[in-house]
Length: 481
Image (cartoon, rainbow, N blue to C red; front, side, top):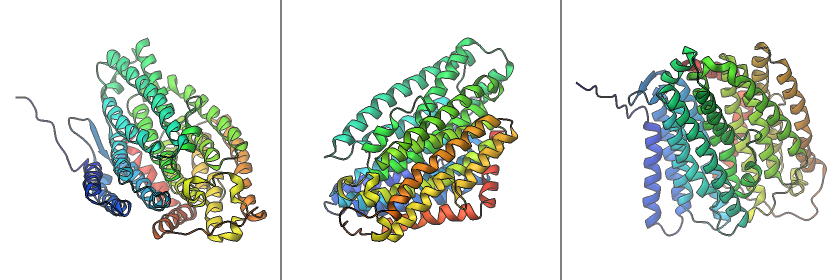
């Protein structure tokens, strides 16, 4: 008798809720001629909150579903929560952005919800093909979102670049998976782990492992696979840029860590040095390139590249402390970067006319709250206490030191010190210079104010009281080991 695989719809309920919310928004958008953005945002937030409630039971699970294709565990729960926080804050910051530009696009929220659902499948995957399906689901939605601004040539150019390079990286990833299948006879993580543990690793498997690594390196924007990041971040709508820098990066790192720690850990000595080199190059180039940027979106893009390098230190550190540090760092980075891009969206005004660093001159005089919020977010990105960014870097660096990677930590500390220059440059513009012209008064929407408030509280609260969240991150990585 053929065994019937377990079908646990409850395990993937958070993703199903987001898909259902996306379908509801799509149907409502067909009938609402005016005010579709507000309605779509309300339904999207409701979907995110219901998905968060449906995600709660996963924290206490540790099993597989759908014939072992999906992991239902605390690791999935943690990253689902990160994705939902990213999606919720992005919806809140997008409402005012779209209405200011006169874009009554409900499709924006549909694509955002579908992209988030794809990310959830990525982080819960127990099979390389499920990773690929989730990756393509989120990628296709993001390609369209990047080029969604109808009057922006930069937006269209960014979408085309991202599509071409993204398609290439997906092909590399899929071909690497095919080589691994030819070597191990399966793409399931447990079967791959048995193959690598046996020790008879073929050259084809090494090539496949390398190509899968390249595919992930592209998605996390690690040097030298970062070329798309500055142009795409600059051309995309500011709220979406924040979502890409946080949600997409978190999902990619979640799948990256799960694949390499659950299935390729026995071959760690073969890939750890490559990731060491990627981390060092990413930190150095990301921070040095950010120093010379005059456009704040490009500066934050290179900053995002540099932070990918810090996160890679957690993978190099290995054991449980390294990945646990990565989870806390991603939580801190989620609040920090979404808050920063929320400020960029608000200051940029209609058509993102004010995205140069010089446009932040005298912001402390014209809008003290916005200047204070941006300063706190930049302090967190620089790793200055008592923000969450400081605790995140301290945790990852400590794990790497304990694992014996002293020189990698030295590079991390030096590049962090260099980053203070370009972060503080913005702070000095806001507090120590005066605007050349009288700026228009910035109007806060309730949704934008709520998003910035949540981000600020998150950055400061988990920075001042990090213990519970560090313990939560440590518990969430246990299913990997």
